[in-house]
Amino acid sequence: MSNFHEPHVTHIKADGMPWANPRSDLMRRNIGRASQRCNGSRSIHNPQEPFISRKLSIPFALATLAATTLLVAVPAAQAQDQGDWIVRARALHLDSANKDSTGLGLSVNNKTFPEVDITYFLSPNLAAELILTYPQKHDIKSNGAVIGSLKHLPPTLTLQYHVDAGGWRPYAGLGVNLTLFSSNKFIPAVQTALNPSVGGSSVGLAANVGFDVPLGGGWLFNVDVKKVKLGTDIKSSGNKVGEFKVDPLLVSVGFGMRF
Image (tube, rainbow, N blue to C red; front, side, top):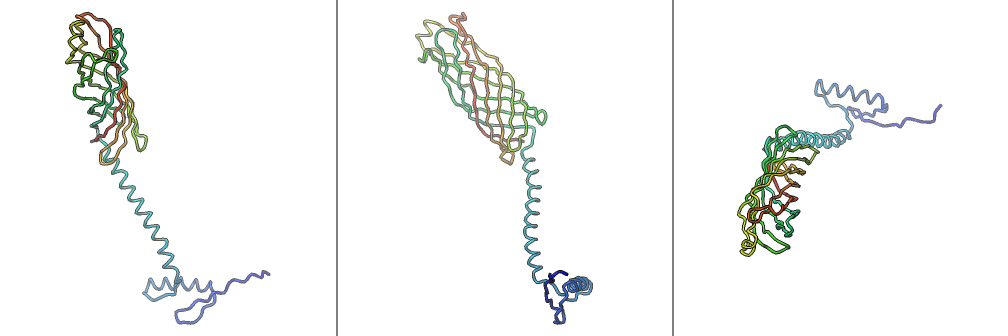
């Protein structure tokens, strides 16, 4: 026979007398609880049970609250960042490639300026983006010396593919740039010697990559990088003497609203 003895636990009955059998005591407690539910009589209970119940109920309640909050908040945030339109305002930096075939060492200055773009979603992933700004003025230089100035208006239209990467939305696009040149001016000495002119327009390919980061409430943060084929003929007294290619890299950062 085993020398192990079941611990003796003394419980108190409702009438104050000791009850020495744990198994019988357990049965009695179960019967007492059933009786209590039926007729409201008082039953014997473990003093630690309410404390244990409170310890278990508090984290359970918190977990339930957190889960409910997530279930409500996540669809709401996603709904706020849905829509067919995005309008962004960005600061754009133009970095010119300055490729010149005239032998005059032509270049234009780099600059930073504001731009606005409008994006329309044709499907959940496919979108068309139109980039707009006002005419931008650039200095024209020959071997580093300023010889004149011009303005250009470069609207760009791209077709983009967007993906939802969870927390951010990268995209890539391909399209066309139309640049309109205007207000060509040269210093008097150059005007008299060469009578130069710059072509009226340029049409070229445009490619871009970027990403949006939803901020909630429909707002988003955007980073975008474009490469544009942009060039023009250089003429002297009406005769073409070469080509000047700006072919800029355009880097922009800004904020937008989706609706």
